[in-house]
Image (cartoon, rainbow, N blue to C red; front, side, top):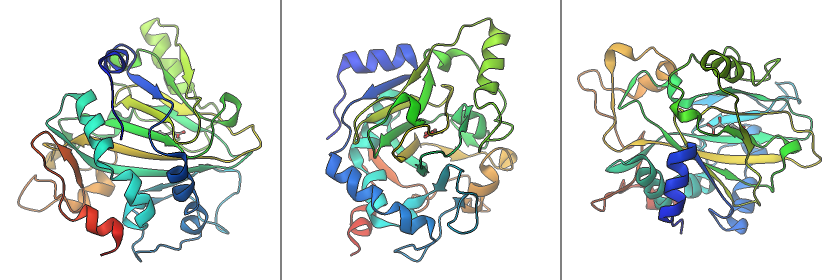
Length: 286
Ligand SMILES: O=C(O)CCC(=O)C(=O)O
């Protein structure tokens, strides 16, 4: 169970992120990581394709970092981790929400030699949501190293304000460019912190914290699973639905309401004991 101390919450509020050596059991990290190859071959246990999918075996260049968005829809082992109640509780606590629901999960696989992912602020993609807030739990499925392309975060950058989305997210020429430009505009000297943790460890980051990751210059794969939470009380903003990632996730909006359906945006945990009722049966396949 993920339990955060007051000292960790204070650190998160100061830095805009918090690294943790153990979020899940390393054996759970192995079980999830063992699903990745088949998923990127297009084999989904539930028969349902994920929402976004940038890399497929045999179709895309081998030196690209691989990312699936909403892997939980395709694979129950992935779902059993990305939809954990304690992840929701930790994210809601750090964000100060009444509860947490998942906007999207990310299945990320960066083999040795695979290229970078551009620095960005998650909330810059979320103009279609109110409140426009996100709190993410990033779990390493392999031991991470700075040269192995682990995620990097910029200390205190959650207070820098809003900047545009990355020009090119996958394999940009200079993966730190957007962040460096933002820092220069504000006259800041960015302090970059790589998330170096054993497998099963990871980090939480604020939706406005700048982060990205370099090429994997190590010998081992760098796999991670990210749960991006939003408030359990979040709703669509129909007039801004085409902004950012709204063009993908707006398809789950009803035509007569701004309500987010918990079958598409599962509620992991609320202060008053709430959790989407279907999750526990779904992950067991019952
Ligand atoms: O794992 C990475 O390199 C980037 C992940 C990311 O962008 C995120 O968790 O928001």
